[in-house]
Every structure is written in C-alpha cells, then in structure tokens.
Image 1 (cartoon, rainbow, N blue to C red):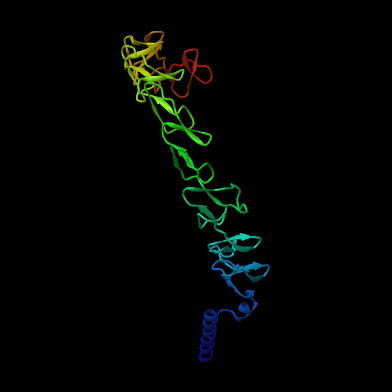
Image 2: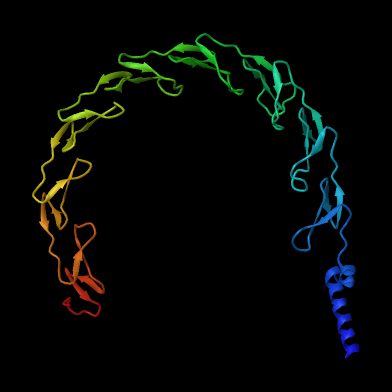
Length: 302
C-alpha cells in the first residue's frame, strides 16, 4: 500500500508541474516570432513592433526620410508624414517655400501655405511653381471676403460686381436691396409682387389675408379661392369643415355624393372602415356585387 501511495503521489506532482510550466515539447514546436515582432492577444497571428512593417515573414524597419516622422497609424497605410513646414515629393520631404504676405498652414496638400487677408494667389493650380501672393485691388463699394480663389472681394449691399467694379443696383419703388449676387439684387416689399422689373401692390380680395411671406394672399378659413375671389364654403347636413378650412367632408358613417352626404348602407357581415367613409367585409367574407359572401359562393348570411 505504501508503494502504491507513493506512486500516485509522484504522478500528481508531475501533473502539477506540467500544468504550471506547460508542455516543454509543445513550447519547442511553437512557431518562432521574427525579430521586432510580437504575438497578438488573440489567435496565432503576430504583428510588427512600432517602426517596423511586415515584409513576408519578417519585420522590416520603416525608412523615414529626413524632416519626417512615423505616422500614428503605425503599420497601416502611410507609414510616415512630413514635419510641419515640409511637403511630400517623390518619397522625400521638401521644404515649403512660403512667399511674402503668406503664412504656413498644417495641411500637407495644396500649397502648404495661404495668403494673408487682403492678398490672393496669382495662380490657382495646386503646388504651382513661382506662386506668389498679390495684393487684392479693392474697388469702390466693395469689401474683402475670405475666398482665395476668386477676386477676393464682394460688393456691398445695393451694388453688383460688373467686371472689376461695383455698380449701383437700380432698385424700384416699393423694393429693398438684398445680399444676393445671383438675382435682381432686390426684392419687393411685403404686399407687393414683382412684375416687369417693378413692384406692384397685391390686390387682396374680401375675406382674404396676406400670407406669412407677404408675397401672395390666401382665403380665410371657411372660404375657397375661385379666380381672384374668396367664395364662402357651404356644406350639407351631416358634414363639417376640414382642418385646412378650404373644403368640407362628411361625418363618419356618411359618404360624399355630389354636394350631399348620404348614409352608408352596410350589408350583412360587414363593418364601417377606419376612415368612416365606406365599409369592409368581415373575415372570411369577401365583397361581391355590394354584398359580403364567403369563399365558395355562399350568401353572406351568418
């Protein structure tokens, strides 16, 4: 009994040691990580350390040119970016040449600089050679804008750009100047409408009012527009004025027939529909020539 007990004790110790340190044979057969690599948390994949990228089954150092730094996305996409004041050109970083009356920007596309307010580029192309910032020639009745790709100025209210100058807009009586550069440059006052470059007073009929924008009129509730007038709406018995106030509808259980509301006659095995202006057959009945009949052609009697 003592020998058997000792043997069992020995086996238990071996099991514990194997569980603690793993199987030496399994560790020996584990794939070896390449230099400058690490094993990922999940699965059997591995990745390259910061500053390295996969090249077959190895991790190769990322070649960072002068005046550049590793990008934050590490081993994905672009592996390096040029420092501020430099732009990428044929795999290298060349210094951004900032002309007079300009300032450096962080964006590494386009020119890498922008003109000071009151100046604009003399060329519109990206990375155009010999691009300079020229002073904006501001005409009378104009103000500077923030655009770098146009004239650099806008005409003040009441004036419109014509060539390199701002010309006064002719504003008709009962109109006012707007900030728009794409239409007349003016709008008619409330209660007037444009006609042949003039502002003509709206003729508002009886029982009507000017709408919120002041460009047209609408009939009051209970009236309907007919040509240039507002005609009072008359509705029959068992009807009421709709929410919009410009028409009427029959109460539930009645249907509109011409200018009257007729009682809806509901056949056997049917019910009033949800809108209340018609009927539907109960299940499993189906409508057939104004009656509700079961499938198979029997009469709709329950």
